Amino acid sequence: MTRRTGPTPTVRALVSDRDGGQCARCGLLITREWSLHHRVPRGSGGSKRPEINSPANLLLLCGSATSPEGCHLAVESHRRDAQRTGYLITKLANLDPADVPLLYHGAAWVRLDHHGGITVHAELDPAEVAP
Image 1 (cartoon, rainbow, N blue to C red):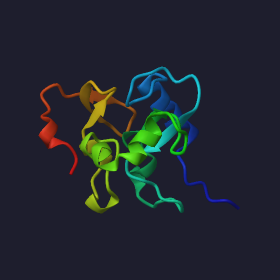
Image 2 (image 1 turned 30 degrees about the horizontal axis):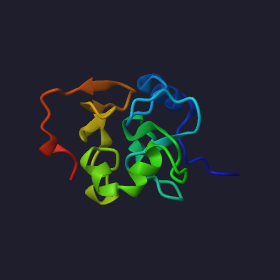
Image 3 (image 1 turned 180 degrees about the horizontal axis):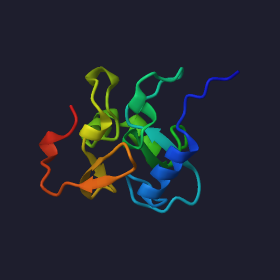
Image 4 (image 1 turned 45 degrees about the horizontal axis):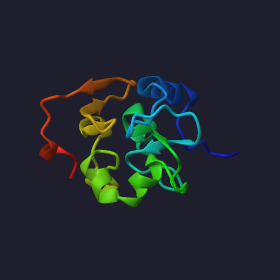
């Protein structure tokens, strides 16, 4: 029997609804290749961290980690900037993704919750972003 390590169909639907079918980074409507991105990397063998497949840790991104165009490759290729803007959270920091702000659509600082919600934080200072 194969162990399932990814998000459930319910969680996938919550993330898709929250992101409105748009790339969370650039805001473009996703009509072609897309990825469900883990802010805290899951790792090739999965993870036992309960929040790893939570909506707070997942984003819709255009492209894939290997396609020449798209935000997923940009996040994976520019990891320091992705950490500064909340798209990547290092496992070593042991942070809850719901506590790490995200620069959503490149325009607004938000926090994502574990139930598929999103809260805009207009007063958030970019210096407060993930380590």
